[in-house]
Length: 190
Length: 186
Image (cartoon, rainbow over all chains, first blue to last red; front, side, top):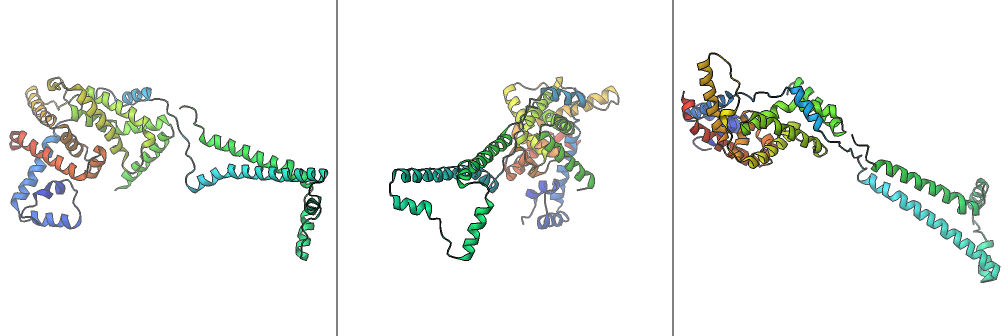
């Protein structure tokens, strides 16, 4: 450390020193009259500056706050968006719905195309294999699963694929749009 | 930190959160909590109490409009003081004319006409000495000596490095000790 600690005196006076530096300065001040005088001068200056009074209040505190209040603009409060992974899932939802709808449309189109091909006799053998030969489960478990699925669905496959599933997906998409709109809507001005 | 200070800080956090949601009454409470500090800060920067109140109002209006940008990392006071200091700097640079110290109203304890006059002259000399400092050093000195902000809080308020705070404060004090040498020796 320097012979004198003048560079640390202001920080010491302002209470900014900690730990080892603080201990060093205090130890130095115990046997250095010059630095002690410098410290006293800092204290005298602060006392002199403190003599100057505060500004005379031209406006009462209540009136001042009221004047500020009258001038406040109408602020808009923006809702917080979901962040990070939550936002990614939220964005992926409508995409998944659209892909699902597209898949159903493709399946329906394929089914229709096969029926048309059958009517006009195109590739009859291949069409017959596709339309009249459901996948034969090779195991007893597979047979039981097939029977369970067929008995548990109250609708025909055509109704399910053509109407019900698209309707469910469309409703889900609409609901997503509504929730998204509410989340991103700014509130009324305040 | 004592319990009263902790409660005050928690209350202030709650008020800021409510104000950020648009609660004008909560912001009004924040104005009442900090208006004296802001007015005095600008007053000591400028020497003009009417100017100080005008700038303080402008500062609180700006604070309301920017409230969404406030993060409770630094104290709310430091954030408001930053806005007030910037507003004062802008206004003082636009003014350019010398502040008329004689026109400034000073409140001093009355103890006889002559003694009052001596006090007033002394106060004016000190205030003039502070006002004669460069704006950069003056602001650091005022935030330290009159608002008791820590070096880090001053750095956050003025958006300057810690080392710059220390060097400007040292310059201000050294200059004032020379300017006010007669009063210091008295």
